[in-house]
Length: 178
Image (cartoon, rainbow, N blue to C red; front, side, top):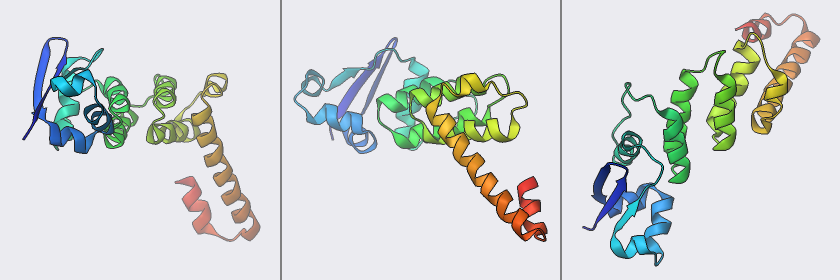
C-alpha cells in the first residue's frame, strides 16, 4: 500500500494512493505521469482552504458531507479541479437547495464557470418557476442557463399547445399548474 501526502495552507493529509487514483482522474493523471509530485509522493493543493480539502478527500473515502458544511461554492471549484463529477453533482445539489431570489444569479455564474450541469438546470428551473423578478439581461449573459431555460420554456409551450388542442384534458391542465 502506497501513501500520498497532500498539503494545503496549514494542513497535511496522508492518504492511500489507490483511493486517490480510483476516485479522481486528476490524481490518476498526476500520479501516472513522470512529474515531480509523482516521484515525491506528495502534492500541494494551492488556493484551497483546509476544511474544503478535508471534505473532498473524506468524500473520496465515502464520508457524507455534513449539514454544517457551508462552503459549497469552494467545494464545486475543487471538484472541478480534481475532475470529480460525483462531488460536483453533490456540491451543485447543496447549492441549489439554498437558491433564493437574492442569489440565483450568483449560482448561475458558478454553474457556468464550472460547467455544473445539475446546477445549470436548477438555476433555469428557479428562473422559470420561482423567481418573482428576473433580470433577463443578466441571465442572457449565462449561455448554459439561458439554453436550459429556453428548453424548459419550449417543453412547457408544447405541452400547453397539445392540451389546448384536446381541450378536455384536465390531467394535462393539473400537471402544468403543479
